[in-house]
Image (tube, rainbow, N blue to C red):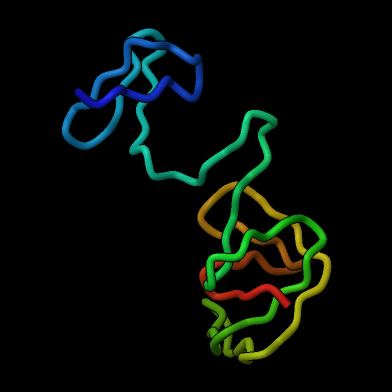
Length: 108
């Protein structure tokens, strides 16, 4: 039988799978199991569109034109963003004034 993962919140061993999520009965935490992976020292593991690991301070290029919601502005393909920061969430790359998804970026 496949071994269940430990709870990422409390490291509990008695985790079970309820067909959609993993559930920890000790702390009540629920997770899908395919969130952004985190290492023990709480550093995010974020990959670009080509599968390369990104880190804080990297330079990245935009791989396609993106329209900004609520604006008529368009971010052009090939735009370079320097000295990025990785953040938790859906838009996981902080480019200064913008938060972008890593799937639209490639490491420069």
